[in-house]
Length: 192
Image 1 (spheres, rainbow, N blue to C red):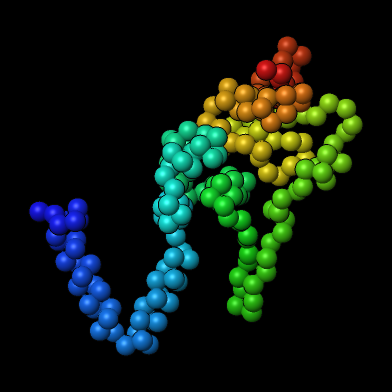
Image 2: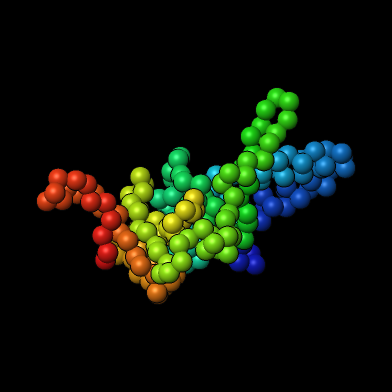
């Protein structure tokens, strides 16, 4: 049975909680609120996404991957920092990495973003290059030379190649492969 579209049991629980909350002292309410806020600071990726009111499908659209890739990433216990950064940035946040010691904490900047301008200065003049690399997770990263961060991560090599063409239509695209050549050495890159 429902009243105002909400099941009566849910309405009753909400009413009971409101009554309970009103009966608490201001100090106790403050402690409860502080505990809730502290809990919200330690969320798993799927809980964080839900707290930001995003579905996997919506986040997948922002990341330009399919929904299954988002689901897969949320279940992993070990992810690339670049993948995690993309995930957080797609939700409007920023990833900061810090080391915590008994005598203090230190912000780690080694994994910070390299601006596009600084990145271009490092690259040889001439045609830009993009690399498609297979990652341990089985998906594919689109990377610029010298960058520690992937420009995009996609589930298939074909999608990564298409994304690389979107990122820079004039870039020389190199796809990672490792095979033996007729000359007996390893051949690591090919053009699509």
